[in-house]
Image: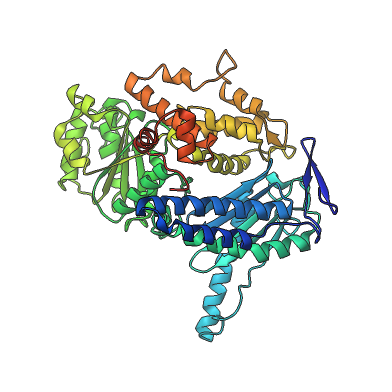
Length: 546
């Protein structure tokens, strides 16, 4: 036990920052030891050597973060990369409840942008002047040094959060530390983070450059109006495809269940394309009765039918930009035929008009049902489908990306909090048990349902950190039996879909229990490594140490 400072958490003694006499393993010692171990892998086969080296690097990064957190005596420590579309958690170490404040992170991002603009102006006047100078960005103690404090930080200790850039090269990496009762030795904490934070960031950056998600996010050239939250492999694969199709004018069909974020992805494709300064218009076929859908989409002229007025259709409103046609399974066949002509570049006639009109639009579409089944049932015209389905992007349901739930939950917590006008609202985060409950649910309503649950927690949770009971109550608010289970939704699915969903949930759970180590997870599942690895591949689940 440390002599200089102690902290109490959940009835247990938690060490704060140790004295000079307290022995700690430094991150430099850990990384040096790891280098020696990598050299010992040279006698292995190439594939085995690469896998062993990757595992060793991932485990070393975790140990470095944990060693630094324990030396700081903090409840949580995050290594976060600031990107043009938001922030990405690159490494973390947690030992209890914590608040991950997007307000603080966004503040650091705004300061970085301002600092970069200042440098450009000074360089324009005196080229090369700042080349060898240190960054003007300094660390931030929150909420003490913040002018505008978000509700998530109201009532917390003045030195609860310390956030500082530790690497500013091609990418900006910040270190974020959280103390639930405030840091007792701020100056000492600053010294530790300045000394060890950059080494951790350099080590992590060297490994992350090789990852596909790093390349994916680097392609996003401009800020999006709505951030794309998540870093799971299956979601990053979706972003990779979105980036590729954004550089074209081909029509794209987004496939995925309700609430999975198809409209958000469609808007992102538009905002990354050359049409980003032109309108983005969303048209949901399911929102209109079949008899008025044509006039809403193509426009109408006064007197065309009872109650008809001169109306500019959604297609013409999107002229020059992008139109997103959602729920095309609800689009009548005659409207599909008319849209087919527009896709071929032909003109169209508004309802009740003899004058043809022509538009220049990029088509994005979404479908919620199986197109093969729709075609067999004569609800989908083959010619229309052939023209609109040039490219397909599958949007994964939330149960396939449960590793993204913590980041999504904190994002929704900050966003939905702005709709609350009760200054006494205390909810700042989630207990480990609450987060586990969020990650154990099936989420039939996907991201939209998760957002709704977080909104309910803001209304009903009475503690600073949501409990497991808070989460289960928020999920089951419309159910008679207050005991949710992911299997309730499985029984409502066709067998092959239920089997696929169960496999994915089961494999993700075993990987979590095994600390993301595939060999150990295979033993827990009582499967051979080969069988286990093949199922992981089919479920599109990858580990950090791959």
